[in-house]
Image (cartoon, rainbow, N blue to C red; front, top):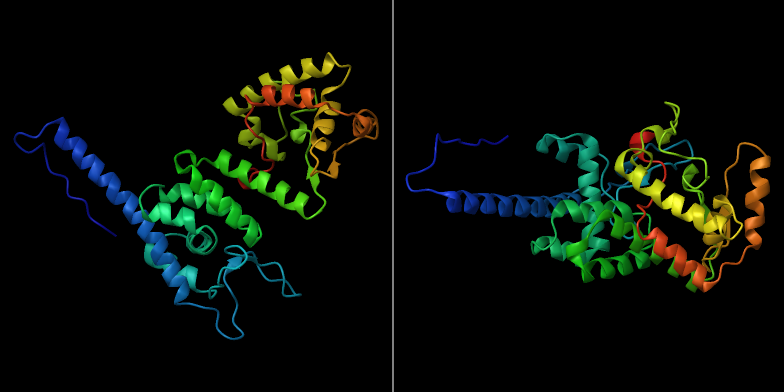
Length: 306
């Protein structure tokens, strides 16, 4: 694919400054190459529109009803011929899935996140960070994606996955509230983390996605358990259980209409059902926000854990 020539030793007179300059130049070249790859991927997509009666590229397979295929990028982006990502991937020496992701990210950035894309081309934001954001916005409406793009471009130096997810969540809730669209929240107990029974010694069956999830292992799990104990104490002082507090807090958001609480036994619902009648005051919500400031968000099932 490419060759790197390694010379024995340093040139006469070369010192740490010379090596650091070379490292910086190599890093700049790496960032520029990654940005150029996105540009090339978008251009490749332009050259390969879906032919008449042809199949577009996407994720999954089309079922008997002509459905089931998930587009490579979000609403408003052009579709690409089915073979295009595979051919590009072959030339790059990557997998077909990597080719699909590359083209999807490039189209998402160019058509729906143009401000962020401009920052990539300017060298302000690394391509890999922008691609992380692009992968999270494909299911948003075009209007939502435009707003998220504006918010991300305002503070490109803090473009983390956590911040992108929070902006997307806030955008969805604002959008639905403004249009009187109902919101159903899944997993208000954070998939068991807020059940009040989970501890650092809790283990999960091998076929349980939580056994492989970063949300329930390692430092993230330990940090969140500390926050859980603080929430539990706060709830206990008000004669509430932790699950009741979690459900009440979820429903306290004016954008949320319904929340689904999972249960394996009917008895598990007796305590949480009453949470619908619990009213948290503004001061209560501020207290909870203060506690949650130290938490790491739990995003639910991860593909690698399914």
